[in-house]
Image (tube, rainbow, N blue to C red):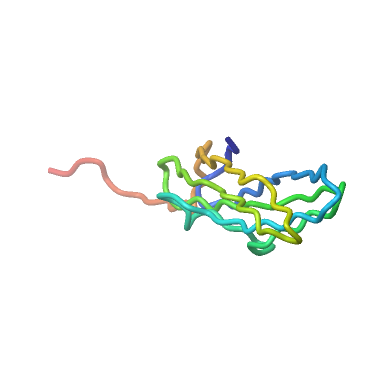
Length: 115
């Protein structure tokens, strides 16, 4: 589970680190699915390439719109390259709103009670 904690209407970025222990290049197609998948994004695109014996990172962004927790799933589905395919990976994405910052403050003066 990857947790995104931040303020309401803020954008939180998390990284998923992937390693390739094989001697072949691995290519994955990243997809976001679930109830709140529209609140999450992959700014660097949906294709992930991991060089042989290498590693890479995927940035996942979350932009909060509501107070309720958002949930989605990041699916990494391997594309077969030269007969080699990696395992399908899934990551649960969850959000938590830690605080709310006011958009603006208005000061008013008014009598509390009138006859």
